Structures are given as C-alpha cells and as structure tokens.
Amino acid sequence: MTFDEIKSTLVSRFGTQIILKEDRNGLQPALFIDKADIIAVCLFLRDTEGLYFDFLSNLTAVDYQTHFAIVYHLNSLPYQHVLVLKVELPANRSLDELPELPSLTSVWRTADWHEREAFDLMGIYFDGHPDLRRILLPDDWEGYPLRKDYEEAEKYHGIHIS
Picture 1 (cartoon, rainbow, N blue to C red):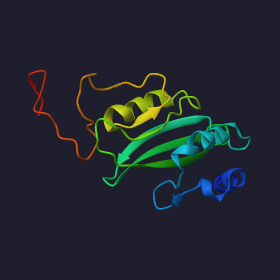
Picture 2 (cartoon, rainbow, N blue to C red; picture 1 turned 135 degrees about the vertical axis):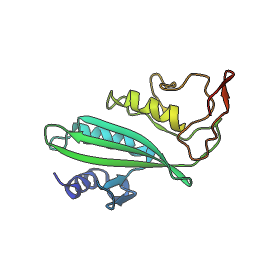
Picture 3 (cartoon, rainbow, N blue to C red; picture 1 turned 60 degrees about the vertical axis):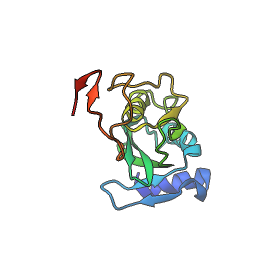
C-alpha cells in the first residue's frame, strides 16, 4: 500500500481534519497527527485489515527549538509497508512542566522502552505510561541531554564529567 493510499484510508475513516499536514521531503514521507488523536489513529492502523501496522519499529523525539516533535516509525510486517507519523508539541522548556502526549504502550508494547528513552533524554511526558522513569541516566540526573538548551553539568556527585 502506498503512502497516498494509507493517507486516503485514514481520511476516509476520520475525515480530512485528522491530518494536520504532511511532509514529503524526507527519506520517508510523514503524516502529522494531533496528539489528541494519536491513539485512535494508531489503533486503526494496527487493527485494520490491509494496513495491519503490527510493529512500532522506532519512536524518537526531536528538538526544533520552536517546538518538539515525536516521530513514530510504523511497519506492517505481513504487508511490508511503512509509515511515519509525527506529533508536534510546544517547546515548553520548564523542567517542572514537561510537554505531554498520550502513551502508546496500550497499542504496541515496544512503545514502553522507546517512550522511556524519549522521557529520559528529551523530557517528553507520556501520559498513561505504566512505568515512566529514566532508563539510561541515573534517577537523580538533572535536565534532558538531547534538548538544544541543555547545559552539561561540570560534576555529578563530586565527579568531573565535562
């Protein structure tokens, strides 16, 4: 199934408003979905015959300074097609109030580890995640190292790290 056929199937099911915009300039074209619709869209993509996106192969977060983007790479193993979905979030730089979107752990179990990594390194909060905590950095680490505004500490527990 082509990108345009998948897009058409989504529009047929949810209406034209489901796709906020699209990007055809990258290596893989992407559809932008509102964070409020991401679970419904992903369930539809997973459960619909002919689509059956049964594998979340990657989830990552990107800091564009003006906003964050969460990028989902989906695969249908039986039908051998791929799709990239993106959700944009405001670039809230506060460490007390993180950008937030729904967790996809109820759709794909693999989202568990991917979301924990995006939380740990970028500071994206996934609402409904069963165990959202740091996965690569120590629990008491301050900040999110993949953010463009991250300032590396000189010491961690008295040990020079710079």
